[in-house]
Length: 107
Image 1 (spheres, rainbow, N blue to C red):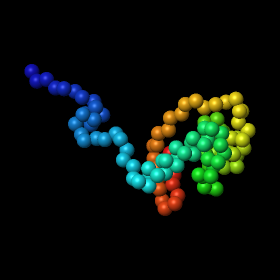
Image 2: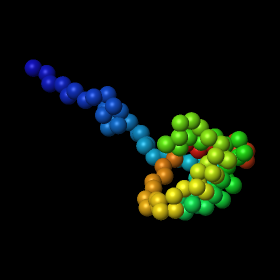
Image 3: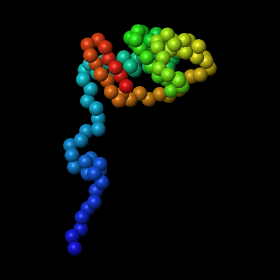
Image 4: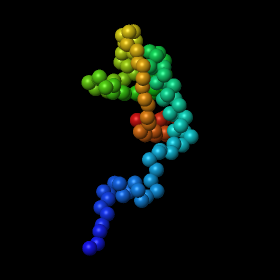
């Protein structure tokens, strides 16, 4: 009787291929990510100056918004945020960084 080892395809792929989970970023992408970390620090501390990192055409969708909003609305939200609310922990992980000249998109 022959015996076979049945390995699920995703597990087989991870075990028997030269697969790297870590993303390799270009120098341009790394520079953009440093900016993301900087403006995030400003935003966490309630400093609306973080919006200087955003293009005028910016549209963002916060978790508690009904639809994407522009810079002006985000600035109002930041300036009217309850001063008793303090963010104590946040984790940033880049999923995608696209750079084209002096314009970048980060997800």
